[in-house]
Image 1 (cartoon, rainbow, N blue to C red):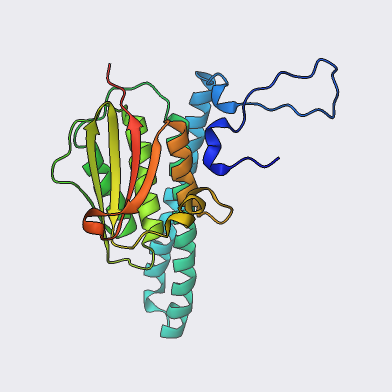
Image 2 (tube, rainbow, N blue to C red):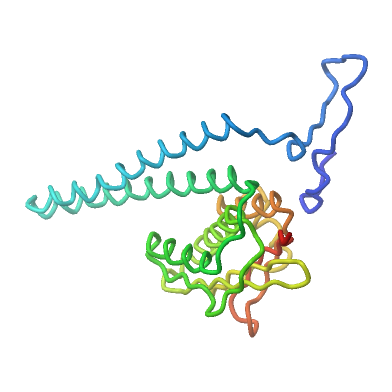
Length: 250
């Protein structure tokens, strides 16, 4: 029986193992309720991520160094090599994005102090420089009752979704906004491209053709028990994507 994607909270409910020991029986598990591994496992994962990050930094510098070496080469050689170096740099971007998403998901449940009020603007500025895009935070950003790792994962996921949605409009601005209301933190990303029709919005995030950035945002929403909203932006212009997260006020 196929279960609806829109009913994702109920997928993976726990069932008892059959007492008969029938190897052909189906066991349904709920990974979200398994104990979180701490200590050595978490340390090993952090070390692995740092090792990959160090390799990516070396890979990212190679095209720049090679372009310097090609400065005196004939024009046709520089042109052909430049295209290859651009492709090389694009692969480094893919590895870096995958590493960031892995790191965000690995640390999203860590206990930590609430993020400082400048955290969203700081992430936006860093991601804007890396992507060569205008990514801005709202002029006024409240202090959000969310642990820093969770906030970082949510903001990164929203930015990734915005970059994917506006790939055909690289001059457009991505704007982050945040507010707290009735025990919820609403993190929104606004962009200028119109949203898809309502009938296609679930498939945008959870369908078989969903882009990695969109499915990652869906997964982040699932991990932090958030509601995921998509619709027209302010004044019915462009798109607003929102993660509505329970706050972690103590």
